[in-house]
Amino acid sequence: MRVAVVILNYNGERHLAHYLPSVVANSGGADIIVADNGSTDGSVQLLKNDFSSVQLIELEQNYGFAEGYNRALAYLDDYDCYVLLNSDVYTPKGWLEPLVSRLESDPNIGVVGPKILSDTERESFEYAGAAGGYIDYLGYPFCRGRILSTLEKDEGQYNDSREVFWVGGAAFCVRKAVYRSLGGLCGDFFAHMEEIDLCWRMQLDGWKVVVEPKSKVYHLGGGTLAANSPRKIFLNHRNNLAMLYRCATPLQRAVVAVVRPFTDLAAALSYLVGGDIEGAKAVFSAWREFIRWHSRLAKERKEIRGYAKHDSKYIYKGIIVLRYLFGGRKFEKLL
Image 1 (spheres, rainbow, N blue to C red):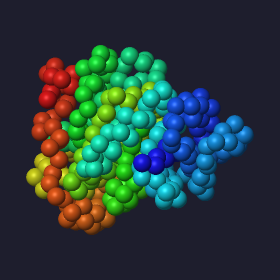
Image 2 (cartoon, rainbow, N blue to C red):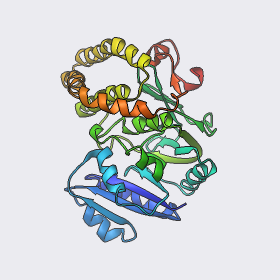
Image 3 (cartoon, rainbow, N blue to C red):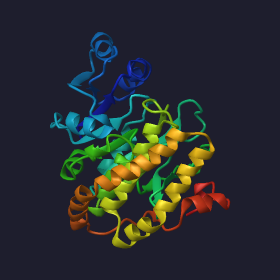
């Protein structure tokens, strides 16, 4: 299986200088490619001067995570699978082989992800992926090892390889044929939730989404947008609503339509109470944009639900916020 490890970069010169050496040193057998998303810092010059073994794709502007990857991967025909890897991920020796082997072990696996740990607290899981992700019935994501903002220590409790609902986009090993047949990531999302949306569409099309903890990587996180950034709040809310509209069953979509306005209003009010006026505005802006997208999303939904072979078994039928409030702060206590 021919593998391309593809790092999308935007003004990430500092991250490339720090993390790319580990990728180059520890990804034997794979081609390393950096797709630059129109950076205005010294990223491209750094790559040309210090990383001659790394292939460079230069995109003319910042297309965001989703469309940036779509455009970059369109150039890469001669591979069997792509590993989408964030620029702020440290890859230890032996990280890649278990992912590729797991993908090769079952022709029905569309994507496989590693165990993602924090690069700043290496004994802890990292927020965006941990040991495999799920969503609840209202669409809120959580992980084996991370419920809402509570992160668990990695004590080997999630070392089994299993099917999950989503794996983190920070390290995402996907079959080229599956990626292309489903149209890749949703470019309109720009960033955030795009990997969960793609994993959902894979399952609707009959593919498995698998986590393989024999592989582990260390993710810094927040390299592009800080957790409390209004832009990040906006993208997460808008894209989550769009994903649900595109992919959910009629029943789930109906429940979301009734309940989510109240939960998102509560989120906006919590930002206001905390003095974050811009965060509250971002929630309302997300809903406004989602409503503007309605006709486009309806067409996309018709196509996606049209090819759905069966619905995912890995949507948690409860509400994760309620379980969290009543003591469900560890994944193993939920499922």
